[in-house]
Image (cartoon, rainbow, N blue to C red):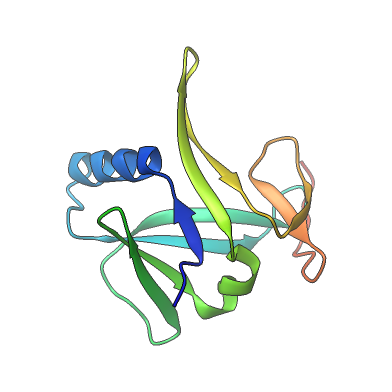
Length: 120
């Protein structure tokens, strides 16, 4: 099975650091989609220890990544990177399925799923 989401090495290193800082070593990284945001859909990432029956699990750079099967089509081919600049650092998400993005960079919609847009 191919990876649904592609973590860069920089993102994986940052996630490992965050796991250690928050005492979540051994947790899995959940990448999710939820309704909302200016464009209708938004991304979510967090640490999780339990995997559900409806989850897809794969490993990248030593991190177990979990994606719900319902979110897999929307996230397929998405690249998650971590970039450091003089203004600080942050994760960037490049989703080839997004046809519109909000200026905030964390809200989007796809041709097949417009989500639930909210007022910004």
